[in-house]
Length: 319
Ligand SMILES: NC(=O)C1=CN([C@@H]2O[C@H](COP(=O)(O)OP(=O)(O)OC[C@H]3O[C@@H](n4cnc5c(N)ncnc54)[C@H](O)[C@@H]3O)[C@@H](O)[C@H]2O)C=CC1
Ligand SMILES: [Mg+2]
Image 1 (cartoon, rainbow, N blue to C red):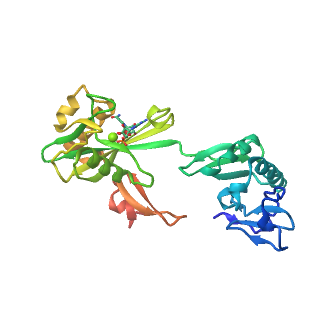
Image 2: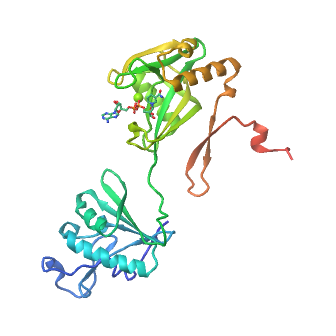
Image 3: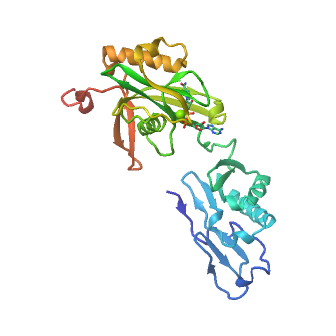
């Protein structure tokens, strides 16, 4: 948890010369509260931010918490930020994280001229960083991969597998239906959702079969791409495929997909993996899923690995 510092600590964190246009602050000689995370002291003629100190010794500044932000011009902001940086340096802070609401993006150029760089952006804000510590920056980067998930829906009774041909890319190439994971979505849930959206087939997660990692992927805006294929069990069989995304969709004999030439290498390899699993037992190919509580956060996560025999899980009487 970042430590919230008291007002006095950050009194000089961001200051600019008071201007007459802030007339509502010209009377009174007490500190007026002007919103969460920000205080105004008419005597000191400064605006102070409630900076947050993180556990690594960096400082986070949320401009959204600064009152009168709409009326602050870029030059005043830059002067205030410069003074604050000096202060943080003298206090031995290692980095500054500056969170800027999209409507206040005019401050980005001011910050950049003082050495800040983009760290990441969300739909409504950007985050810039400035390294103040010794040597090159040790700040972690932002997201490095996108995650795509496909569902290999295999019907053990008919030995048929569900395949599609994309409308927009890989035309005439058979592949498994799938798509990009939503933020916070489990891998198996992405596979089930994407299969249903693209083909109309309902299914259940069974296991994780393969992971492909590819760098500098044009479809991932030049970032890395993780493409995960799951084994799914069908719960319905009537195809009603999405005309926007697919030009063909069918239940194909698994052996035909294994022999097919108009397919991607990854689809072909996973078809062979499924053939092996269906003949020798899926335990040979499945990475199964189990949920655990996270030690530090108390949240839950999923762990995927080859099935571990029950006596090895408990280790009862094993020593
Ligand atoms: N090796 C294989 O068999 C294949 C693997 N993949 C992997 O699957 C994952 C993504 O699957 P998708 O089916 O593509 O995702 P998806 O099912 O989430 O569809 C993405 C949608 O966004 C649209 N789209 C993408 N870029 C666009 C742009 N610049 N402008 C407008 N619309 C755009 C597409 O037309 C599609 O409708 C990735 O991980 C990718 O690497 C995708 C195709 C084949
Ligand atoms: Mg798709």
